Length: 218
Image (cartoon, rainbow, N blue to C red; front, side, top):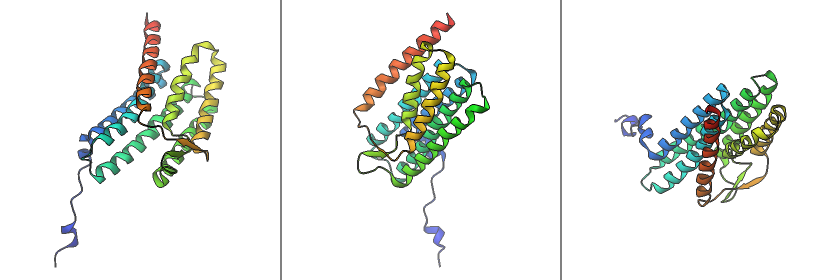
């Protein structure tokens, strides 16, 4: 009698999924987030914000690429979904937490805020992975990529207020985003047309923070 395992298909290797173009785009977003974390630890927040907004751009781009790949198998789609979710935790949960901790000179007072934004992200994505969208076009809670969108925008105003005021504002924004991530509210799933808006937003903030870096080094 043949072994039942003989009829089972050999699973693909882990690295075989890295050849998928959408997954490569997701990994580019992860690299951007790692750079954002690195520069945040160094206290170079303009460079950190460039990394963060690029992480948002790649997060949007991987979905667009995946939808255009008609030959993707069910396993590739499921793997891509899990990969995207795990990278989102790093990009829009851990990265904002590190930004907050670093801006607060790693004071213990900033640990609760850092924990809350990471915990909210984990809870939000775990919920989404189980229940998905509410209806056809709504999320429950604020989609976690908005953490990167709003945080990158916030630092545009960094030089307009004192350090103490901005520190308080940063802490409050982080807490507000965490609350919105898990709030029992519906937020719309933005359509494909918004991708071009995100592209323009990424370009504008990258140029702005790049100009800040050049001005600082002159």
